[in-house]
Length: 293
Image 1 (cartoon, rainbow, N blue to C red):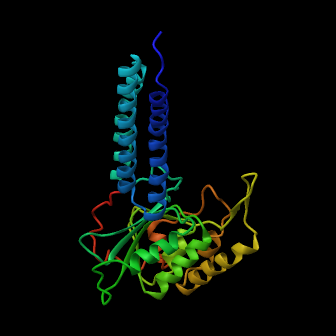
Image 2: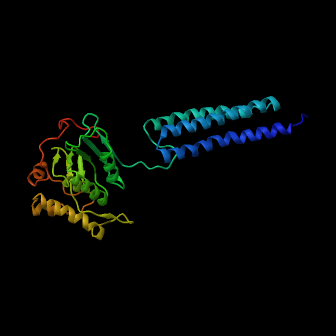
């Protein structure tokens, strides 16, 4: 019976543990890079480097075990490891290419803020008015490159609404910087305050503008319209409607308590009531549908 070489056995065990530790350590390093540097591509490269070291170590274990003891099972494991690494590398590389996070528990916002390539003074907010969306918009506009601050800033919005608090912050920013608001798709619920906060409002004839009373969703999925925290938003919306001389009948309809529907006035009515006061877009062609439609 062949005597087992204890030093080589310990070496194999150490290398085998290292082969397992390398990809695990790479995962946590990659997660830290995504969390602190917001760089999915760098995280991918670091994880791939650690996994490569791990696979190299596993192959070294295979060679030692095969040569010393004629044990070939580790080689099969190494082959499966290479296949698994190749498959996962393709998936993670695709995510990194589109700047998606793989290793951290980062939750992607349901909105985006973009600056137009041809007209630097034109911006697009597309998505929900959720937590931090207003501050993200403000940072993106104020920190944008090539903006001519002597010319009007235009914000195109496409949103189903969301947080009344975020709408208030966003509307104050639009009002203070005299930003023109344009709607090509839809502006519903809390988004309507953002639209009304501008003194220059363009709405495409086929766009949807939807009003309803602000509400909070309760734990039982019912809706509450009478929370004190909502009163400020409702009063702000009514005050803005009064400022643009919307009729009392129109203002009353915007208070409808219908979370799943609401009041969707026609283009002609929006024009009559003063919601629309711009006949054309500032920079972009209104006949060209945006990519999100």
